[in-house]
Length: 294
Image (cartoon, rainbow, N blue to C red; front, side, top):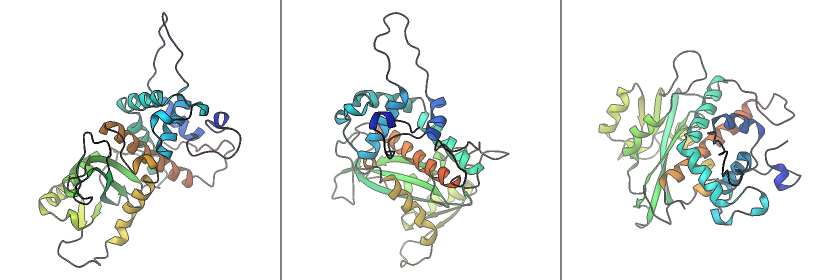
């Protein structure tokens, strides 16, 4: 049975109804909250239903206070608190790393090369990690910085102010890639080659990249377009398209950067889950779950 089908009626599964396979991987990562023996208060809402509420906000972009109560996912504030608490417990990052490991174990992840880029978005409520954007008439905004593998699978994503130059986030983005397990031997966290557009063409930043054992292939500033690197860099643009398909990631509504980062990391994990499902599409499963490989 699909995750929250009982709450939303019988029929085709909605994207925010968490699947059994994803829930099987996520549930062990959730922190256990012991209920007090005395003065226990109201019983906590089922965690799976709350997760469906978080996904509903991620997919639709709806404001927390407008989360429909008839869905059975709890109040918007309940879902917000769980998103915050689970983020502080490292759940979203652990889920992302777990799925990356399974992708690598299935030979789906290709770390022979990677690509990086940044994308601007409006930050209508301001907050930390925002700034006056030079590409949006000085309006307050933020930036998503993403590094992907050769197939466009997001390895890491960060949030900064809209006034930050992409190249300044090159090294932090590389260091944000977690150790990816899934195969015998030491975990892998460094790609062999790194592709980027001409905005990253600064020797002061490329030198440390080479010292990490990564070969940077970056379009040169001051040259005409047509370097040919776009045939390898397009995957990061595709990753942004997938991330911004989540309406909550198109415009930043969160004042707190850590809450927006939680949504961004969760979005990366969902993209990894879709790739994992596709890689095992040939294996029949009556429940819609995907066998674990790591």
